[in-house]
Length: 345
Image (cartoon, rainbow, N blue to C red):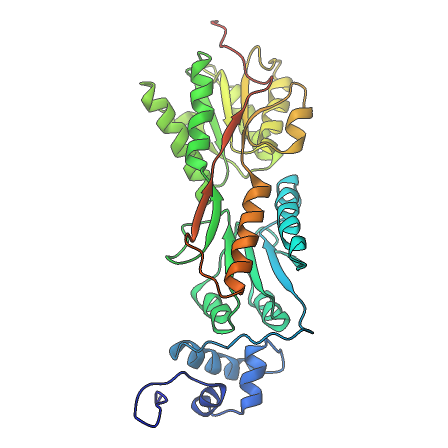
């Protein structure tokens, strides 16, 4: 393929007409691909996308007063209060700028299907927020070529260099939870994390291990479980851990929901909280303070994370380059009634 040049032979920016000529299609066809229209043959779409990527095409974003001011908010799943806190943070920041929010869910997947990306291209939003999900290289280029910025909230995996992300200090969250339990005299401390393939889960477990090691305690692999952030995961692993003859006297759960499952497991096994078992959760959802006993937990500033990511996205959409493309907000321990000093025997 020939790289377009100017009258003096220097390389110039690729235009839609150039892309059409290189792909052997009409300019309207290229426009349809750029706008995510479905009425383009898959082979033609793939050929046009390849040329757009090869020549680093970037559409000039020229918005009019009639264009809707929207951002797309894409969740891996929505059926929990954790997601509601993030939605609230996004809506607060977006409504302050008179920007609407389009909500989508991936059904538990961490990567959008192509039809969702096509819908985004057709809407031409100001930008896209991805929560615990990510894009592959082709999808990233599709958004970049249309001048649609994106920001990742609470990354699923390690994002590629240059991808804007907003999260929290998960390693420190695991550390302060473990230090709290150690300060109460607990030495056999179990952990029920989220999925092992999720970055924040691994970071919290790393913080837990660091807390034990700084206290001179070798982490016991039998006390480390990988859950799913849901109540059932906490319950299932809780029953298993608490049925051991050398059961833990404290459990750090990687989410408040998993803490609920642990508490249910403890009650079924005849254990009292916090007399027989101390429990620490993670997130500090509104329900944590209303449990009986109320839940000691690590506060993850979900609304602040979501608002910060929204503000970053709108800055990118306005052509501004944030000074810091990776922001991790602080976590803190909220001590309530579910933890108490270890009772010998």
